[in-house]
Structures are given as C-alpha cells and as structure tokens.
Length: 307
View 1 (cartoon, helix red, strand yellow):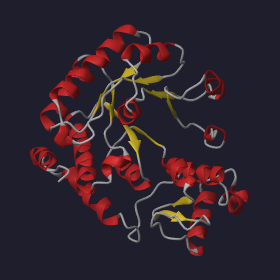
View 2 (cartoon, helix red, strand yellow):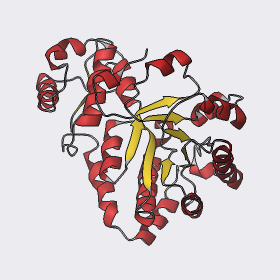
View 3 (cartoon, helix red, strand yellow):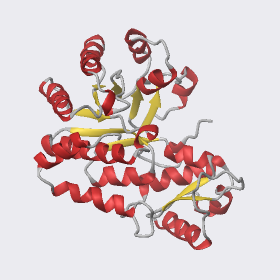
View 4 (tube, one colour):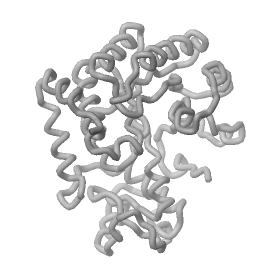
C-alpha cells in the first residue's frame, strides 16, 4: 500500500526504491519535494537477484529525481569484509556517474575497516562528491548490539574527519537510532520504521519509543501503550500541529493511521530520549563519543565487531 505521507507532512523528502518503482507510482510522487532513489543494492544482495549495473542505469534514466544512490554491495558483517567488494563499490560509483552525467549520483560507504572507510570517503570527496550516503546499518545487522555501536562510531569518525561533507544515513530501523544520528550531525536520513512498526500495531511515542496499540497476541515484546502514554502522544501531535489530530483515536486502529502518526513523530517531533526509554543508556553512551579523541574512536571502531 502506498501511503502518501507528503499529503500530511509538508517539506519532507521521499526515498523510493527503484526496483519496485512503477510508472504509475512515479506519477503520484509530488513535484515540490526532493526525491531520493535507492539502487536496491540491499534487496539485490538479500534476495540474490540478478540485476546488473547497466540495468540500474537504464531504470535511473526514466526516473526524474534529485538524488540517485550508487549501486553498492553492502558489507553485511565487518568480519566478512573483502577488499574486492570495496573496490567494486567505488568502481560502480564512477561508472554510473560517467554514464549519467546529468544526474546527481550519491556514493555509499559501509562498515569497512577504518582504513578503507576513511579511504573511500577521501576518494569520493577528492573527486567532487558533496554528499555521501552511510549504509550498512539496516535492522537485521544492527540487532547485534556491538554492530549498532560500531555503526554509530563509524558515523562520528566520518563527521569529525570530513566536517564539510553532507551525510545521508540509509535505512535506519528504529526511532531511537533516528534521534541518535540526527543529534550526531546527520544532514538527512531515511527510514521505513514508520510503516513497518505500524504494520505490527506499533506507534512511536515521543521520547519513549514504540508502544503496542493493536489487538493481536503477537507484539514482539513491545509494551502495551498505557493511557497516559497515548495522551502524551496526543499532546505532542497537537503541539506540533498534526493536521489529523481530530481523528487521533481512530487513526490508532488502522495501519495507515498509525503509519501517518509515526511518520509525523519521526519528522516533526524533536527532543531527547526519556530516562524511561529502554534505549536511554545507549543514547547517553553514544552521545559521549562526540568529544572522544579521534584516534581513540578509530581504535574502538576497529575493535568493535560482531563477536
């Protein structure tokens, strides 16, 4: 189901996956907002699809967007890093950029060993890139706590060493992680958590995180929403001028309604993570890394793996 969040949330960028994008969907996209196009590299890897770089280029030619992600091979686990993949990703970027000189192609970096992470960003910056995308933090991977920390430290390293470049963070899988990366200086990010959580009956409560409002037994360990928590959500939506506030209680009952609420909270409601959140300690811990010496961060990054 396509949920036209742009009809509710103004001035919000939209990320679309070129692998599932159809001409009909293209016609529905608004003309007054920035459109980002994902190459589908993660889906190609996971689903073992046979889609080559030239096919991606042909699809990009018919899409009128503002930003296009380079075709990358995600580094799904730092322990499985292969220098060949690193070289292919850099080669893909320059190949697509050459073939599509009139489109803005965004290079993607992953959780490579620090030497290669820094080298990749240096290579892109030296060749004129003003924006890079930071990938490899998709939900199946960052469920491993140590890799979640590694992804955050890696971002801080890039932000500190390359303060002028814009960084877009790809595929964030939770509300808390969106808050963390924004507070650490991400210029933009994308996430599907607003609709994924809604599909499982979850709403995002500002500062607290996810709460369950569905009527199924399967809720993945998420706490049931208390009345006072829903009232907090209602007040925050009202305070930030959520346009569907009068339909709040009915929206909680449907997938589309919960998705719109979640999208609004992620994009419009600011503030730190509450002490009541199960992620509070993680939030405070990673923010403390901002002032750590860069050499200590690089050492910690390389020492942090999936074991």
